[in-house]
Amino acid sequence: MVVVEVLLVLAIMAAIGYPLFVQPKLAEGADEGDAHHKLVAQKESAFVALKDLDFDFRTGKIDEEDYARLKAQYEAEAVTVMKKLDGNTAEPQAKPAKQKVRYCATCGAQTEADDRFCSACGKPLKK
Ligand SMILES: [Zn+2]
Image 1 (tube, rainbow, N blue to C red):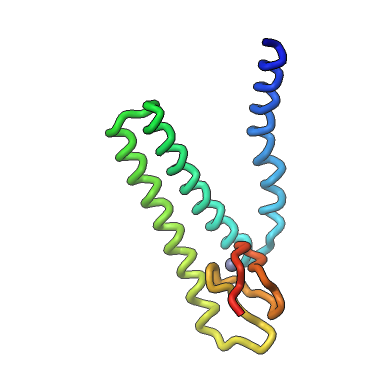
Image 2 (image 1 turned 90 degrees about the horizontal axis):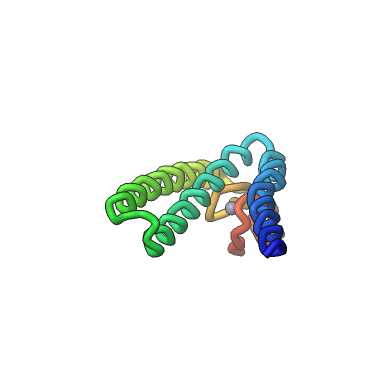
């Protein structure tokens, strides 16, 4: 039983410690990319919250009323963030693209001509 407890403690420590290791990486993206990364992170956390909520509801941790209320709240958050991300996309696309410069169709970040994946959001880039 002691082994199980130790593993549990390690798992909890890993779960708590993980964001601490990930955070500095996100913070490295300077200036323009920073706001974008923040939005992407917000969008992802809203989706994670929705997933957790679904799980809690299915496992009976929360009742239907709370589920509906929280779901609406998280969805509104996700929509708000996605609208902001869309706004970011619209701006660079309006500028005339130079030969070697392209913009990610997903997030609007500037990419190199020979990049296969967006350095900001990681989505594959269309040729
Ligand atoms: Zn992108």
